[in-house]
Length: 366
Image: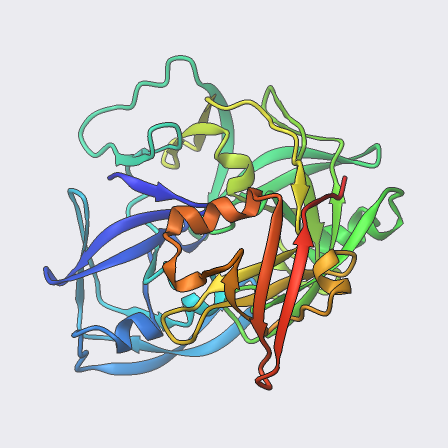
């Protein structure tokens, strides 16, 4: 199954042999297939049986509608049936580029390869994967979750224990509120930033404030990972509350590796394919592409120490042009490349209809 990688793993998916959608692959959502509410509304899919259920995620829990027709889902050669399909507001969390979310079925039965180097997924239903050259790590597989032991060194303090493998996260390491308390993360010395994020995940928490710090390094098996910032939310809810794991490890770490998950035998195989790169300059704000429902890209993330914050850019503002070009004219690849551009010249419309023109230069945070 080939995928597109832009911080998340995106798979081309066919629903009921007719509807083609772009699905985000999430190991934290095993055995689930969900559809975005806007993608559903703008499609020709008209479910007959719709009910309600409670769903949980990184932002707590919330009631969602569910499709109970029985749904066929195909990704590459993998075909799966789902009796229940929850309807999430996924684009509010990710961007217009996502139509659905998929946590592969039968991951506990068959090994799964995630090849970031060549960008494909492969499930081994009849053959065994070639693990030559990989390091082997023990894992736990509980409640459809994959957990592994890792160590994050932060301000000289070692935070070692079980971490959740989460390809639904585009970040590096995010600690749970339980880890914040257990390891007194607020008392660790070092540079830190506060940042706000709107709609941090599935759930009813609309806004959260996180703390960001630079790790000394991260140890996974015999591999040392450098140049990685981490975050924590002192008042985490849902998947980020007091949990049987210290935190989640996302794709900003995993994309350095080719990975084979053998949940049945409780083993994880990793092989490096990419070196650690210094973080470099950043802007300290982020947007979600919502050109599916509005004029542009909506600001959802803001570092309190960023130029954008000082210039009066706020969460909820809509960016209509960047560097003199209408955002609707950017391809997905061009949009991603803007994160490494040396300057952003923005035209913005606030929720109240006011217009702003802002020029921002990327800067070193660490």
